[in-house]
Length: 109
Length: 122
Image (cartoon, rainbow over all chains, first blue to last red; front, side, top):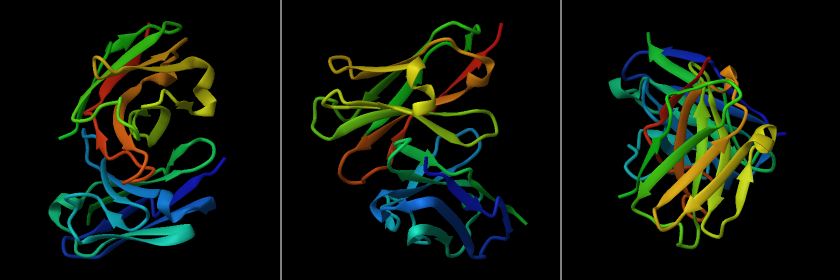
């Protein structure tokens, strides 16, 4: 079973700062099958990134994804007030078919 | 525009069967490549994928719950139903249904319902 680990667990930053979130897989992941979601309290997750680096429709270009193999990164270039949320990475693979990471909370410093 | 909405009981007793319905619009499960999945989230916890069904009636389940889950579709009603047997308090969670497309964007859920909170309690 492939496991995703996200770090840090919590990232405390100020608006305007750069956020770098890490997602590490226990087994190699095809980059085409790695996505990132944003979730705010009481809301459903929102797809941000698919294929490791492609932005979903309507996602601002301050969000970018990168990485390959077992190490992937979500970067928010300049935090806006609405970006404080929990971010999950997700892989599509063998078993289970879809796996989510434990999440990184980006909160206000 | 794709939308999905979950419905079902808010409280279920332990050992009972939970039935959740996802009503969707903006796509059809008659169309090649389309699929609907179920994902749950216990309070304060991470997301957990449960099941997915595709236009061709291909179904996949998370291994740890496979014996308790059944996913079906009714294309005439644009509806997907998830049943979970023998529920336990640990199954208390918000249950989301979500859209996925085989091709682009690949391997992710691009549209989600608002979720429905289910509590398992006697």
